[in-house]
Image 1: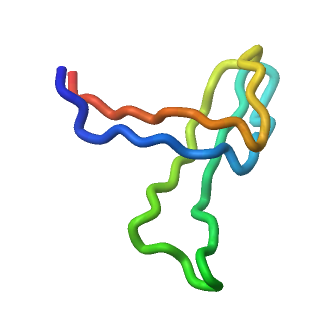
Image 2 (image 1 turned 180 degrees about the horizontal axis):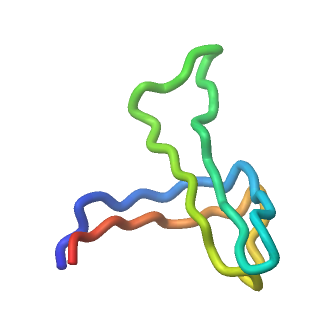
Length: 65
């Protein structure tokens, strides 16, 4: 499949959802005091044991299957 979108971004925050999963997030850093309208954000639940932390860079890819 060809990706619909693929981008790299820094994880802003990792939230504990429950004993099975966490949520990694990037809610759009401010640029010059204003939100960058082209910034892509993410909020993705992932299984525990991932080892990710705020500041890590990740690649997000969306494909239709």
